[in-house]
Image (cartoon, rainbow, N blue to C red; front, side, top):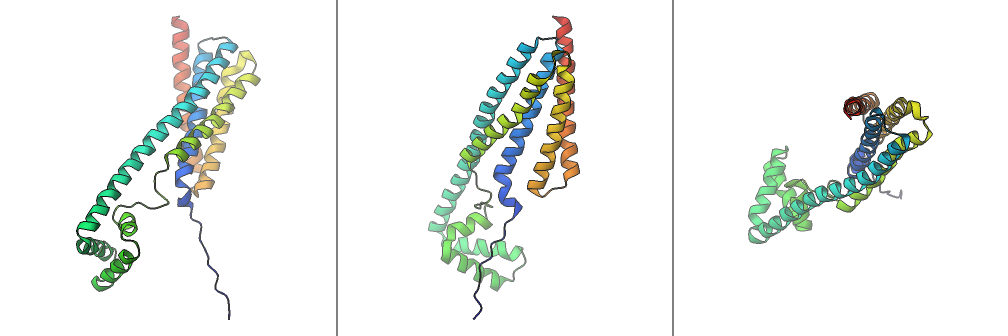
Amino acid sequence: MRALHRHREHHLVERIGWLRAAVLGANDGIVSTASLVVGVAAASAAKGDILLSAVAALVAGAMSMAAGEYVSVSSQADTEQADLAREKKELSADPAGEQDELAAIYAKRGLDQELARHVARELMNKDALAAHARDELGISKISEARPIQAALTSAASFTAGAALPVVAVILAPSAIVVPVVAAASLVYLAILGVVGAKAGGAAILPATIRVTFWGALAMAVTAGIGMLIGKAV
C-alpha cells in the first residue's frame, strides 16, 4: 500500500509579520541616518561632528523603532484579545446564535445553506472560538500580533540599515562626504528594494524605484535645509 505523505505548503503571507518590520526598519535606518548625515554635512560641519550625529541617529533610531513597534503591535494584540474575550462570552451565552452567524458567513462565501450550517456545526464542535476568530474576526496564527518579535526585528534591521551610512561617513574623504553618503545610500536602498521584493514575492522594479525615490527625496530636502541653516549661522 502506498504511503500517504503530508505536504505542507509554505506561503509568502506567512512572512508578513517579520518581513514588514524588517523592511521598514532597514529602510528607515538607511534613509533617516543618511538624511541626517547629508543635512549636517551640508551645513559645513566637521567630519567628527557628522560621524557623532550619525552614530547618535543609529542608537536613538533603533531604540525608537523598537519602542514604537512594540507599543503599536501591543495595541493590536490588546484589541485582538478584547475581541476574543467578547466572542468567548457570546459563544457561552448563545452558542446556537453564534453557529447561525458562522453559517451565514459561509453562505455569503458561496456555500448553500445546508452545507454552510453543516460546516459551521463541525468547526464549532472542534474549536468554536478558533472558528469564529478566523472566519468572523479575521484573526489567525499568520496575522496575529507579536509585539516582541516586531520590536526586535525592527531594532535589528534599523541598526543594520543605519550602519551602512555610518560606514560611508567613516570611509569618505571629508571634502566629499555628501555625495559619497548619498550615492552609497541610494545603492543600499536599491538593494533593499530587491531583497524585500524577492522575500515578499513582489515585482522587483516597482519596489526598487519606490524606496530609492523616497530616499533620494528625503536626502535632498534635508540637504537643502542643512545648507540654509549653515548659511544662517
